Length: 352
Image (cartoon, helix red, strand yellow):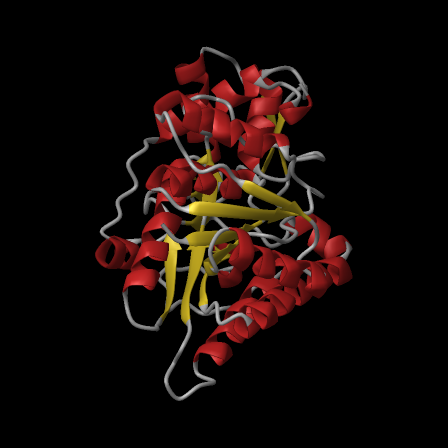
């Protein structure tokens, strides 16, 4: 089976995708700086594989920064000598907090853009021309149409989203740069991944105070935070709170696996597609489901809207469904159940 390099593979979506890759029989090399992740996640990934499989390929972990070109070249060379040449890359590595990107845009442009450029340069030199890029729905900015289709305007309104949009442009230019279109590229624009693996062994583990709603709900549920702050109750929605498209992280991981296999098996092409459920859940609805499925109470209060927020952010996922034959299987109830299981089993994340 092919050798796949996963950058940022110890992170939330990356670690869950590693589970799917290993279960499919791929050899996985993970590159991660662990700035916002833990190597323990990769040990837990292997623990998950032990539960169902008598034998499996062990993860090769290379700690380092993808901006380090020599470091990356050594990884590609070692793969050739010890395993097999790297067939493709799934690229998760990068900084990902919208709030932090506004405060420190230089770090985001440096990490996300320079890191990707260095990676692509090394891939090109080693004739590894298949990449699945972890993009984001944030590239659409304040898109008012919902569900959001892939042809919606690309108008990111924060540095994080701008780095993702810039990388997509680079990948497009790379694809059209040769007459025979050598590259196989997929930009996966996903919406709001939540939940965790059903074992509760791996999950979302932000090093600082989280920016996203779901880990904040979990933090309130275990008593880490006193109450949840909801930004706005006067949105033009059925209950006045913002509506988002939440997708189970394992459905998202399955999407990465399917698009990787599609790229490997077919002629060079570039794809951009949304990965979401196509269904919207408001903040109050998410809280209600979480309380019912987990038997807890989530106290909350309202504050004014945040600048840049939107009433509806929901994906049109028909393209992914048709091209990948992919269908999100996990319900919002299962997302809340699995995400809370991870939290109660690991109240301090991977520091337990």
